[in-house]
Image 1 (spheres, rainbow, N blue to C red):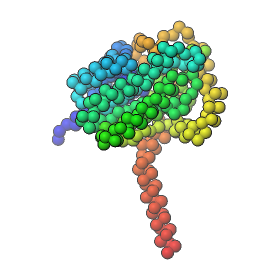
Image 2 (cartoon, rainbow, N blue to C red):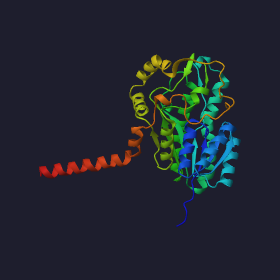
Image 3 (tube, rainbow, N blue to C red):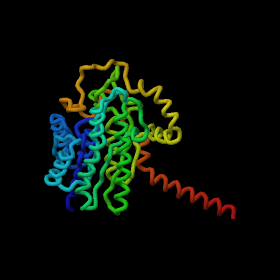
Image 4 (cartoon, rainbow, N blue to C red):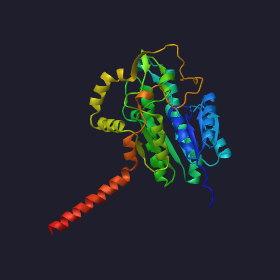
Length: 333
């Protein structure tokens, strides 16, 4: 029997948080992985981790805000690893700040990384996937793609933009009868290192809005979405409920977040104004997947497990309802 060819996976923002956990998850499946991020020290550490799991990794010091760097990385992946099967757009940066204190340069940078970085990654992936008529692009989204919150206007705007962009590209692929699939995975609050290095003007240390999940939960969802043709999926019940609540009562969400959104994104500890941040340059070191909130983070999402089987469960429900209706009809006749 011929040995199964390993999947070729590209992951942006691969060195920390969700990206790092996703690298590990794909490596455990035997995938060969291209790691794209800015920090070379962290890239080398992630590569070593992949190799220790018995897989292969190539590293590419890449700023996803530069389309030429993204294109060059994709070309080398195709040449040295093989045809790209899965491309995961994940790279991010942010600024915790009231909008009135943001600068134009900060806004531009967050938009270039968090939105245009996804656009450039999608362009690079499609350049190779479309001629082969196969492949999957996974956009790492957020509840904030639908529900903006205070203090993160640039990041929320970028996630909203990714949502609209992805829907547009998806409909074009459908129009062309392409078998290339694009999906978006909407994440809950996650225990990642970003809260320790994101630029902040808050008086206290930034934190994810509880409930908080471990990055491995996000990675599990990404790997699953990469192998199933779901147009979009939410990872946790809280963010799914929030999305539906925002559709039904958006004004109530505005009112609630205006009163709780500042406090819920900060701990009680004062922020160190001298700490480095990664908006313009990567912070030196290897930070891994987890942030500072292990004690408060959940390592499983029951909603994700249910969500994976939503279609068969729905189909089973329809069949069961049909069977009950038939029995009742027969009993009456």
